[in-house]
Length: 261
Image 1 (cartoon, helix red, strand yellow):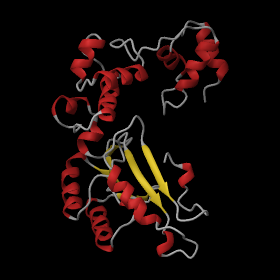
Image 2: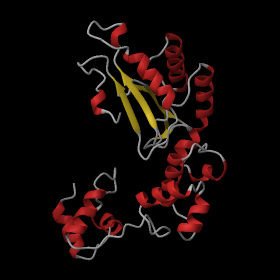
Image 3: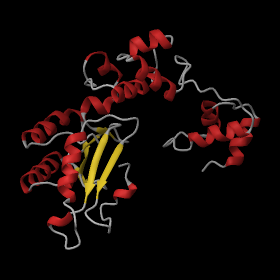
Image 4: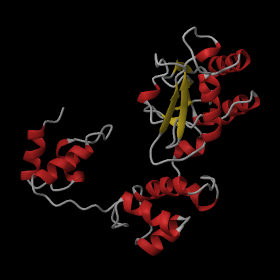
């Protein structure tokens, strides 16, 4: 653990920006959730902080989002030519890719956009700490037929994958090697399934309880609503991952009030 005292001491010794603090204290080098706090401590210590996204863009992410939204720019090359400098880096390229995906309906793997996407979007899977991938097929509203459930189980067995039920009522398949992904997806697609976008800044799941169809307390058909919402908004890109929930009564079994929508 890194204490505030250690961070303040590093600032006094000349670490005047987040990269320097990372190097000096290792703070913010794991999940990154404490980086905003590092910026707050720097500001409290009187260190002026640049809002620039990176060396290629003087604007912040929010400012670039407004620029793209106002101008209708659809490519990274046009944006950096008009509002930045250089050729881009590992910071600004994925950031701009996310902004462009959020402000237009263009396919993210077509044209110039494809080169901006990370590994996860190219392989429709989420890279894990050991270099393998996890695969999450979409199960709208958590609803799944016995036939699809059997296919998922057979894939996990045949490829030696670890399976886990997620908090979003889906099944996560862990441990897939990159060369196995096309074979896995072919079998999932042949069974009528698609990517659940468990790796993207997009709609993840619409969680639901069983609703009035089965539950004696249910007053609304929450499953039907969840399925309709998930099928309607699947593929929607946003600045952050997006989760929804539908509860069939005030008992709130789907924890909808804790979701984004």
